[in-house]
Image 1: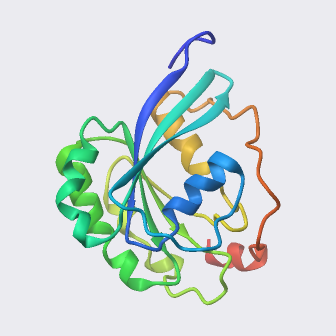
Image 2 (image 1 turned 180 degrees about the vertical axis):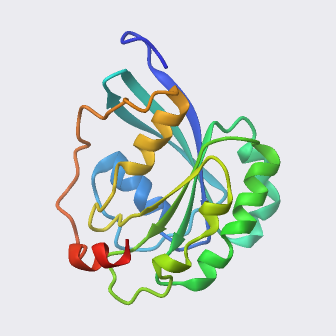
Length: 198
């Protein structure tokens, strides 16, 4: 990790099927806003995401990749020199979870042994098709962590990044010391329901 005067920078690859909320998740971190309208990412967009920790500043240069199959041939080039990754799926769509092993395989073929967070997005929606008991992919793999998240409600919003920072710094005592400037949540996660799923 960098000293207080240096800024640690990491290449973070964000993958998952089209429409799972990858770009909205990144925009929420960058601007604090929630994107209500779906606009497909074409190819890849790179956005710096800054975090303040007790060990100093960390910037994830987040490579937000297109989820559409027509961009599949370009992906390996985007993954080169990746330091960490987030694989995202939509908890209201079983097919997006079924594709997680494909995303993982493609990532680890290019970037071996990088820390990966699996994120089940849209947990603010009560009609959940992918139940927690069925989310087992991460249990079979090394160096992968799972979080339920909601870009709309800010639920578990910072946890994927904090876990990645702790892994990349080899310091489990690393903490975020400054909250990102977020707009008010667009939805709420039913905390009783969330407890039920854990």
